[in-house]
Length: 308
Image (cartoon, rainbow, N blue to C red):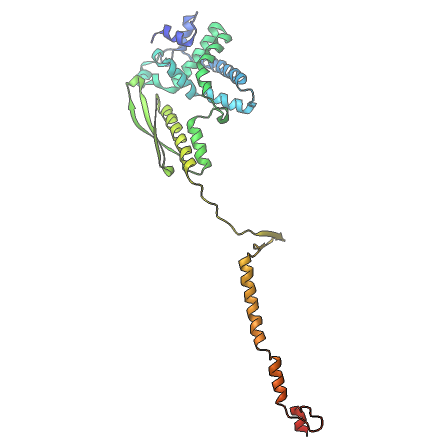
Protein backbone atom coordinates (compact mmCIF):
# COMPACT_ATOMS: atom_id res chain seq x y z
CA UNK A 1 0.00 0.00 0.00
CA UNK A 2 1.34 3.44 -0.89
CA UNK A 3 1.28 6.61 1.21
CA UNK A 4 -1.58 8.15 -0.81
CA UNK A 5 -3.87 5.21 0.04
CA UNK A 6 -3.01 5.52 3.73
CA UNK A 7 -3.85 9.24 3.72
CA UNK A 8 -7.13 8.48 1.98
CA UNK A 9 -8.05 5.95 4.68
CA UNK A 10 -7.09 8.39 7.41
CA UNK A 11 -9.20 11.11 5.81
CA UNK A 12 -6.37 13.64 5.85
CA UNK A 13 -3.73 14.64 3.31
CA UNK A 14 -0.56 16.00 4.90
CA UNK A 15 0.66 19.41 3.82
CA UNK A 16 3.97 18.54 5.50
CA UNK A 17 4.94 15.11 4.15
CA UNK A 18 7.96 14.97 6.47
CA UNK A 19 5.65 14.66 9.47
CA UNK A 20 3.94 11.66 7.91
CA UNK A 21 7.26 10.01 7.11
CA UNK A 22 8.54 10.57 10.65
CA UNK A 23 5.33 9.17 12.15
CA UNK A 24 5.85 5.94 10.19
CA UNK A 25 9.50 5.54 11.20
CA UNK A 26 10.48 3.16 14.00
CA UNK A 27 13.52 3.87 16.16
CA UNK A 28 15.23 0.79 14.68
CA UNK A 29 15.25 2.50 11.26
CA UNK A 30 16.91 5.86 12.01
CA UNK A 31 17.54 8.47 14.66
CA UNK A 32 14.65 10.60 13.40
CA UNK A 33 11.88 8.30 14.62
CA UNK A 34 8.30 8.62 15.82
CA UNK A 35 8.56 8.36 19.62
CA UNK A 36 8.09 12.08 20.31
CA UNK A 37 5.11 12.15 17.95
CA UNK A 38 3.75 9.12 19.75
CA UNK A 39 3.94 11.02 23.05
CA UNK A 40 2.00 13.93 21.55
CA UNK A 41 -0.50 11.71 19.80
CA UNK A 42 -1.29 9.85 23.01
CA UNK A 43 -2.53 13.07 24.62
CA UNK A 44 -4.46 14.11 21.51
CA UNK A 45 -6.11 10.69 21.38
CA UNK A 46 -7.13 10.75 25.06
CA UNK A 47 -8.68 14.19 24.69
CA UNK A 48 -10.57 13.26 21.53
CA UNK A 49 -11.91 9.98 22.95
CA UNK A 50 -12.90 11.69 26.21
CA UNK A 51 -14.90 14.22 24.20
CA UNK A 52 -16.59 11.46 22.20
CA UNK A 53 -17.61 9.55 25.33
CA UNK A 54 -18.80 12.70 27.09
CA UNK A 55 -21.13 13.52 24.20
CA UNK A 56 -22.31 9.95 23.57
CA UNK A 57 -22.96 8.67 27.11
CA UNK A 58 -24.64 11.42 29.08
CA UNK A 59 -25.75 9.23 31.99
CA UNK A 60 -22.40 7.63 32.86
CA UNK A 61 -20.47 9.09 35.78
CA UNK A 62 -16.83 10.20 35.77
CA UNK A 63 -15.36 6.96 37.11
CA UNK A 64 -17.07 4.78 34.54
CA UNK A 65 -16.18 7.19 31.73
CA UNK A 66 -12.52 6.97 32.74
CA UNK A 67 -12.58 3.17 32.70
CA UNK A 68 -14.32 3.16 29.33
CA UNK A 69 -11.80 5.57 27.85
CA UNK A 70 -8.89 3.52 29.18
CA UNK A 71 -10.28 0.47 27.41
CA UNK A 72 -10.70 2.33 24.12
CA UNK A 73 -7.18 3.80 24.02
CA UNK A 74 -5.31 0.70 25.17
CA UNK A 75 -2.85 -1.11 22.91
CA UNK A 76 -5.27 -3.80 21.72
CA UNK A 77 -7.87 -1.25 20.59
CA UNK A 78 -5.27 0.79 18.73
CA UNK A 79 -3.81 -2.35 17.18
CA UNK A 80 -7.22 -3.36 15.80
CA UNK A 81 -7.66 0.07 14.20
CA UNK A 82 -4.15 -0.15 12.72
CA UNK A 83 -5.07 -3.54 11.27
CA UNK A 84 -8.11 -2.02 9.54
CA UNK A 85 -5.86 0.64 8.03
CA UNK A 86 -3.29 -2.03 7.00
CA UNK A 87 -0.71 0.19 8.63
CA UNK A 88 1.89 -2.59 8.71
CA UNK A 89 2.48 -2.13 4.98
CA UNK A 90 3.66 1.46 5.48
CA UNK A 91 6.03 1.03 8.47
CA UNK A 92 9.67 2.00 8.19
CA UNK A 93 11.57 -0.56 10.27
CA UNK A 94 15.19 -1.51 10.74
CA UNK A 95 16.52 -4.74 9.29
CA UNK A 96 16.41 -6.53 12.63
CA UNK A 97 12.77 -5.63 13.25
CA UNK A 98 11.82 -6.69 9.76
CA UNK A 99 13.37 -10.13 10.23
CA UNK A 100 11.74 -10.60 13.61
CA UNK A 101 8.29 -9.69 12.27
CA UNK A 102 8.06 -6.27 13.89
CA UNK A 103 5.59 -5.10 11.25
CA UNK A 104 2.89 -7.29 12.81
CA UNK A 105 3.78 -6.62 16.45
CA UNK A 106 0.80 -5.00 18.22
CA UNK A 107 2.96 -2.63 20.27
CA UNK A 108 4.71 -1.19 17.19
CA UNK A 109 1.45 -0.76 15.27
CA UNK A 110 -0.32 0.87 18.21
CA UNK A 111 2.57 3.28 18.80
CA UNK A 112 2.70 4.20 15.11
CA UNK A 113 -1.01 5.00 15.07
CA UNK A 114 -0.58 7.35 18.03
CA UNK A 115 2.35 8.97 16.23
CA UNK A 116 0.10 9.56 13.23
CA UNK A 117 -2.43 11.33 15.45
CA UNK A 118 0.34 13.54 16.79
CA UNK A 119 1.56 14.28 13.27
CA UNK A 120 -1.97 15.23 12.11
CA UNK A 121 -2.30 17.55 15.13
CA UNK A 122 0.95 19.35 14.19
CA UNK A 123 0.02 19.41 10.51
CA UNK A 124 -3.55 20.70 10.75
CA UNK A 125 -4.53 21.30 14.39
CA UNK A 126 -6.72 19.60 16.96
CA UNK A 127 -10.03 19.93 15.12
CA UNK A 128 -8.75 17.92 12.15
CA UNK A 129 -7.09 15.36 14.42
CA UNK A 130 -10.33 15.06 16.40
CA UNK A 131 -12.29 14.51 13.18
CA UNK A 132 -9.91 11.75 12.03
CA UNK A 133 -10.03 10.01 15.42
CA UNK A 134 -13.82 10.27 15.56
CA UNK A 135 -14.15 8.64 12.13
CA UNK A 136 -11.78 5.79 13.05
CA UNK A 137 -13.55 5.14 16.35
CA UNK A 138 -17.10 5.32 14.98
CA UNK A 139 -17.41 1.54 14.33
CA UNK A 140 -15.76 0.82 17.69
CA UNK A 141 -18.24 2.96 19.62
CA UNK A 142 -21.14 1.18 17.94
CA UNK A 143 -20.15 -2.03 19.70
CA UNK A 144 -19.51 -0.50 23.12
CA UNK A 145 -21.91 -1.61 25.85
CA UNK A 146 -21.95 0.91 28.72
CA UNK A 147 -23.08 -1.84 31.10
CA UNK A 148 -19.77 -3.66 30.65
CA UNK A 149 -17.77 -0.40 30.69
CA UNK A 150 -15.99 -1.44 27.51
CA UNK A 151 -14.40 -4.54 29.04
CA UNK A 152 -13.02 -6.99 26.52
CA UNK A 153 -14.38 -10.50 26.04
CA UNK A 154 -11.62 -12.22 28.03
CA UNK A 155 -12.23 -10.02 31.05
CA UNK A 156 -16.00 -10.51 30.87
CA UNK A 157 -15.62 -14.29 30.57
CA UNK A 158 -13.21 -14.44 33.51
CA UNK A 159 -15.43 -12.31 35.76
CA UNK A 160 -18.53 -14.33 34.82
CA UNK A 161 -16.86 -17.66 35.60
CA UNK A 162 -15.45 -16.36 38.87
CA UNK A 163 -18.91 -15.22 39.88
CA UNK A 164 -20.20 -18.76 39.29
CA UNK A 165 -17.16 -20.32 41.02
CA UNK A 166 -16.13 -22.11 37.83
CA UNK A 167 -12.50 -22.75 36.89
CA UNK A 168 -10.99 -20.12 34.58
CA UNK A 169 -10.79 -20.86 30.82
CA UNK A 170 -7.77 -22.26 29.00
CA UNK A 171 -6.43 -20.80 25.73
CA UNK A 172 -4.27 -22.68 23.24
CA UNK A 173 -2.92 -21.85 19.78
CA UNK A 174 -4.26 -24.47 17.41
CA UNK A 175 -2.80 -23.24 14.10
CA UNK A 176 -1.55 -20.22 12.17
CA UNK A 177 -2.62 -19.43 8.62
CA UNK A 178 -1.47 -17.07 5.88
CA UNK A 179 1.78 -15.41 4.84
CA UNK A 180 4.30 -14.18 7.38
CA UNK A 181 3.26 -10.53 6.96
CA UNK A 182 -0.44 -11.29 7.26
CA UNK A 183 -0.84 -14.24 9.61
CA UNK A 184 -4.08 -15.38 11.17
CA UNK A 185 -4.07 -17.22 14.50
CA UNK A 186 -6.60 -19.90 15.38
CA UNK A 187 -7.15 -20.14 19.14
CA UNK A 188 -9.17 -22.65 21.15
CA UNK A 189 -10.87 -21.76 24.41
CA UNK A 190 -11.78 -24.47 26.90
CA UNK A 191 -14.10 -24.41 29.90
CA UNK A 192 -13.72 -28.03 31.10
CA UNK A 193 -16.35 -28.00 33.84
CA UNK A 194 -19.10 -27.08 31.37
CA UNK A 195 -17.61 -29.13 28.51
CA UNK A 196 -17.26 -26.01 26.31
CA UNK A 197 -14.74 -26.06 23.47
CA UNK A 198 -14.80 -23.18 20.96
CA UNK A 199 -12.41 -21.63 18.43
CA UNK A 200 -11.63 -18.04 17.47
CA UNK A 201 -9.37 -16.43 14.88
CA UNK A 202 -7.54 -13.11 14.74
CA UNK A 203 -4.62 -11.26 13.26
CA UNK A 204 -2.66 -11.84 16.47
CA UNK A 205 -2.73 -14.35 19.27
CA UNK A 206 -4.41 -11.84 21.54
CA UNK A 207 -7.06 -11.01 18.96
CA UNK A 208 -7.72 -14.73 18.46
CA UNK A 209 -8.12 -15.22 22.20
CA UNK A 210 -10.61 -12.36 22.36
CA UNK A 211 -12.66 -13.87 19.53
CA UNK A 212 -12.64 -17.29 21.22
CA UNK A 213 -13.53 -15.77 24.61
CA UNK A 214 -16.54 -14.01 23.11
CA UNK A 215 -17.88 -17.31 21.72
CA UNK A 216 -17.12 -19.10 24.99
CA UNK A 217 -19.00 -16.48 27.02
CA UNK A 218 -22.07 -16.90 24.83
CA UNK A 219 -21.87 -20.70 25.18
CA UNK A 220 -21.44 -20.54 28.96
CA UNK A 221 -24.48 -18.31 29.35
CA UNK A 222 -26.57 -20.62 27.17
CA UNK A 223 -25.51 -23.74 29.08
CA UNK A 224 -26.22 -22.22 32.48
CA UNK A 225 -29.56 -20.85 31.29
CA UNK A 226 -30.69 -24.36 30.29
CA UNK A 227 -29.33 -26.11 33.38
CA UNK A 228 -31.98 -26.98 36.00
CA UNK A 229 -31.75 -25.08 39.24
CA UNK A 230 -30.74 -27.39 42.10
CA UNK A 231 -33.25 -27.31 44.98
CA UNK A 232 -31.99 -25.70 48.13
CA UNK A 233 -31.50 -27.99 51.10
CA UNK A 234 -34.13 -27.38 53.76
CA UNK A 235 -32.63 -26.66 57.12
CA UNK A 236 -34.38 -27.02 60.45
CA UNK A 237 -35.74 -23.63 61.36
CA UNK A 238 -34.24 -22.60 64.67
CA UNK A 239 -34.27 -19.53 66.82
CA UNK A 240 -30.90 -18.70 68.28
CA UNK A 241 -30.76 -16.82 71.54
CA UNK A 242 -27.38 -15.52 72.56
CA UNK A 243 -27.03 -14.85 76.25
CA UNK A 244 -23.60 -14.35 77.80
CA UNK A 245 -21.99 -16.07 74.84
CA UNK A 246 -24.16 -19.18 75.19
CA UNK A 247 -26.42 -20.07 72.29
CA UNK A 248 -29.57 -22.09 72.83
CA UNK A 249 -31.68 -23.46 70.05
CA UNK A 250 -35.43 -23.86 69.94
CA UNK A 251 -36.61 -26.42 67.38
CA UNK A 252 -39.64 -26.01 65.19
CA UNK A 253 -43.12 -26.52 66.63
CA UNK A 254 -44.31 -30.15 66.31
CA UNK A 255 -46.57 -31.06 63.44
CA UNK A 256 -50.13 -32.43 63.85
CA UNK A 257 -48.95 -36.00 63.32
CA UNK A 258 -46.27 -35.55 65.96
CA UNK A 259 -48.86 -34.16 68.43
CA UNK A 260 -51.16 -37.16 67.84
CA UNK A 261 -48.30 -39.61 68.36
CA UNK A 262 -47.28 -37.89 71.60
CA UNK A 263 -50.86 -37.91 72.88
CA UNK A 264 -51.09 -41.65 72.30
CA UNK A 265 -47.92 -42.22 74.29
CA UNK A 266 -49.37 -40.25 77.21
CA UNK A 267 -52.67 -42.17 77.14
CA UNK A 268 -51.06 -45.61 77.35
CA UNK A 269 -49.45 -45.20 80.83
CA UNK A 270 -52.68 -43.76 82.24
CA UNK A 271 -54.63 -46.73 80.92
CA UNK A 272 -52.17 -49.14 82.47
CA UNK A 273 -52.40 -47.36 85.84
CA UNK A 274 -56.16 -47.39 85.71
CA UNK A 275 -56.29 -51.15 85.20
CA UNK A 276 -54.52 -51.72 88.56
CA UNK A 277 -57.14 -49.77 90.61
CA UNK A 278 -59.93 -51.88 92.22
CA UNK A 279 -63.40 -51.30 90.88
CA UNK A 280 -66.45 -50.62 93.01
CA UNK A 281 -67.76 -54.16 92.42
CA UNK A 282 -64.61 -55.82 93.69
CA UNK A 283 -64.58 -53.55 96.78
CA UNK A 284 -68.12 -54.57 97.64
CA UNK A 285 -67.27 -58.23 97.33
CA UNK A 286 -64.36 -57.74 99.72
CA UNK A 287 -66.66 -56.11 102.26
CA UNK A 288 -69.13 -59.03 102.01
CA UNK A 289 -66.44 -61.51 102.81
CA UNK A 290 -65.62 -59.92 106.21
CA UNK A 291 -67.27 -61.53 109.41
CA UNK A 292 -70.19 -59.67 110.97
CA UNK A 293 -70.46 -58.60 114.66
CA UNK A 294 -73.34 -60.11 116.57
CA UNK A 295 -74.59 -56.85 118.06
CA UNK A 296 -74.67 -54.32 115.29
CA UNK A 297 -74.18 -56.65 112.37
CA UNK A 298 -71.24 -54.53 111.23
CA UNK A 299 -68.30 -56.06 109.66
CA UNK A 300 -65.48 -56.65 112.09
CA UNK A 301 -62.01 -55.77 111.00
CA UNK A 302 -59.20 -58.19 111.44
CA UNK A 303 -57.73 -56.10 114.31
CA UNK A 304 -60.98 -56.12 116.25
CA UNK A 305 -61.34 -59.87 116.00
CA UNK A 306 -57.85 -60.39 117.39
CA UNK A 307 -58.56 -58.10 120.39
CA UNK A 308 -61.71 -60.05 121.17
